[in-house]
Image (cartoon, rainbow, N blue to C red; front, side, top):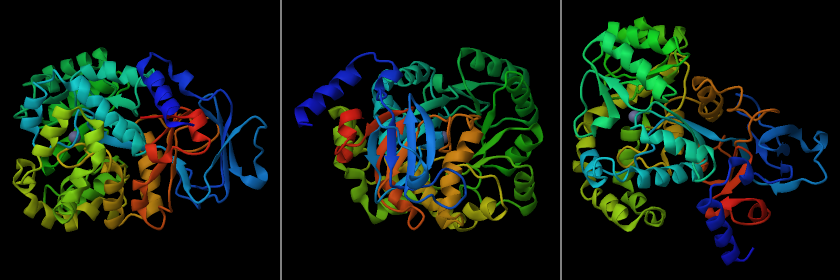
Length: 457
Ligand SMILES: [Zn+2]
């Protein structure tokens, strides 16, 4: 397709209020010839075929035993790997990797410019192959954004959101609309019910809560069938959350603390409480940036942002080693060697989340960096891939629809250039991204049949 027609079609798709369905090709699509990792911890399926139509997968198998409908469009996945769309089980779609939170929120003028920030993060996630994400902490402006993505008006991952978090301690430097500050368990329960009524899909708890608070929140949330995700570092808080029946432990093991005692780790593993460590965002991202600061100056960021956003973003990286986020990086890094592998060694139920886009932890790279850090900490590539797809879908309570490539599920599929079982970091090279049966793609993948049925951004 000539370039100008491509840009015209992009303009058309994203400037009009089209339903999600209209982004789907009106014919079956067959992805043919790639190595398929279906989301399970299992052997790959070589020379695979996946057929999808009207947003759902209709056939999965090998070329010799999987019929392809006559009218299907063929996507040739030869030389590449096909797998479920990645799910980020801890991210922030209001953030773009800016070096200092205080300066960023000042730049956003509290929240006035949030509507410009969120689409930047959303398209970067999509290009990175992240087709679903759990946003753990944003003002309720995110609800409208979640719906715009759902309707297919803008490129972005399918969002599950907490909205504002519940805390006893106010977080410094953040606008009030991000948090519900409580000072009793009764108030915590009431705020939980209010958040769910207002649209929260999950409850996120932050800091300073007592065991009674956690219990009140868990009871109120579970009465509505909603899970509670707790931000946890401190061992006392972990004990309290454990006793109260919190559903998902976020951040534990991410090296902010020295390693936990074995009995605590073993109890969490025995109870199969999902763990989302977010280990990479300081401990791996910081040295990677010291070693190769050029990563901050990828021209894609300039292209993705309004000029003043980009100028402020770049300015925040001057002397990034002095940014407040990395104040304690020396001690954290020394702890990381032991604590990142604690839960893995204990056999805990591992999910994958990035805390992107915390400082320097851009959505464009966060998922593969976290997955690589987990491999370095003791998981095998197939374990991490299954954790980032199947397990994360289980954590979100969406395993009936997402997380594996199976007949009947939504067609959320990515095609990656290379073999992630050999080198997990090839997940940096996502060629084609399919969400909800709509074929989206990154610029460099604009070739072949994708241009006939796909979209771009
Ligand atoms: Zn977070």
